[in-house]
Image (cartoon, rainbow, N blue to C red; front, side, top):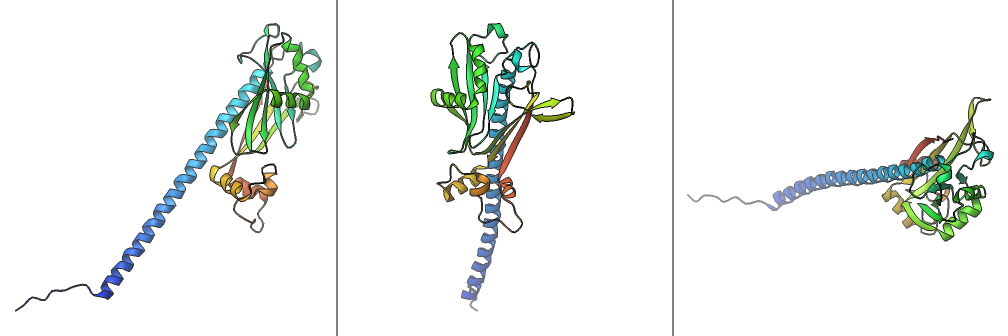
Length: 262
């Protein structure tokens, strides 16, 4: 007898190909999901790393500036506190720091760097601009920080500017002083007694979300993120703009308690 040779029929081949295709689709979905999670984790890690590094850098400058104050008491009339702030579309903190960053005595300060740390709304970056002062009367010039707008303009136009961190959609500086009479914290303004602490807030957007927004809104560089650059399309029912941004950004906040030499 001749043995019969069996072969796959067309229907069997179609069924086998269909099953194989389903398996491949499932594998690709799992792979794509894992890849998306890895990218999201990488973006989040980069955001946290950049935010922490920027916060450490800014806080260190604020602490060094506070140490320059050498008044007889905590009254601003007895010494010049080398910090001031600016609010508005270009929020900034103005600092006077020593050339080498050391906490020097008042009489030994011969030169200072005037520094502005500010958010550039056109590029969504946190920047630092520095302008050296080697006039020989640097300490007395710290009083110029009272005129914050003029000092900021001079520093950013004549000084050297570098980027600290990209994708910054929010920057706040909140100096405060403790009021013993009312037993509460209140906002500090230059010319009053020295502030007791400064709270810094830096809001950084994740890379993918930021790039998506910039691609959709290339001409909105100077606008407010909370009102113009919404990530992911229209807001859902009951969703606020702040909630939408919070899903794709991280706010770093740190309070620096200031200590003064006397």
